[in-house]
Image (cartoon, rainbow, N blue to C red):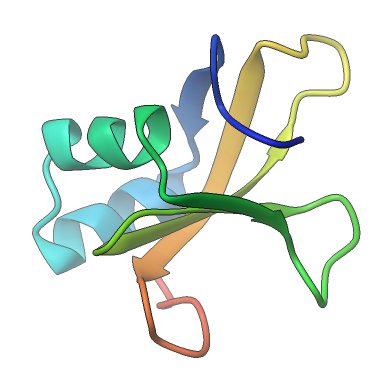
Length: 86
């Protein structure tokens, strides 16, 4: 996965809890996903990717059955070392 063009984002309950905890609204999350500064594979979790802008890092996996869907597992403030627990 090189970018998120043409993909839809589905967030897990954990990702939604983290977004609320950090005060990120739908428009901020959508902007991160639709206009990321960087998309790269996780160094520690095979199959996971990180979608990053200046403020948010969305961690997730592309859907195995629908290549147009990305499942956001969690997210955290960009620049922190580990995901924030929900």
